[in-house]
Image (cartoon, rainbow, N blue to C red; front, side, top):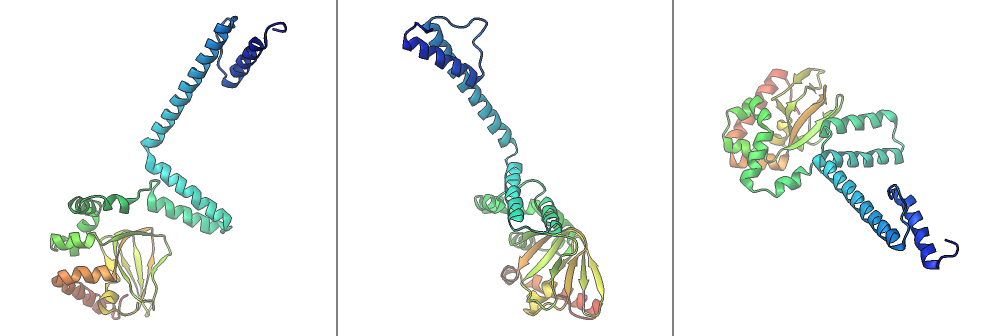
Length: 264
């Protein structure tokens, strides 16, 4: 090529550079004429573009198959970076990791946004289905008006507590009551009495009825999956169903008689 024109020299130089950069061969015989050189480079560009498009679409397809897991992984990477930035101790990092594993179980959804886009009948149907085990295990709901159950379930908020966590502390203002979907909790009273509650039980309603302070503590003995109900939502629902308020008061009085002092 030393005696060829600059056009041929630069064409062959560009051809060699593209061959190395794109890692695409040009067959058993290298192109000789300028037409062959430019056609071969054009075919390499088209081939590389198609290859890139194929890889991109395949990657997008794989990611879309489990977008909720990918969203969870991206979220947890942020959590790990946050823990590293603040130099949290190892045991705290482990508890945070275990919390995320039990709370989200490897998948993350924007449930509030999803339910908010649905009609009320569909939203109520989904909530009733998601809380079917809670309703089945709780005698209070089993014998109650279905409309009351639906109204109550739509106000609930899902929460997870780890073993040793204090769900309620003595002396604090009562702002929530809790329904146990799964797990075991201990009621710790002033007299050092300890009472266990498990699936299908609820606690914390006394302060919502009396608007007082907690008179006992509640500790999670196992990983607990609970549903909480705020005091405002509690009173809003019971205003529409006064008979259920009496049911809560009856159960509360029975508990007070059994343990001999106020529950939280």
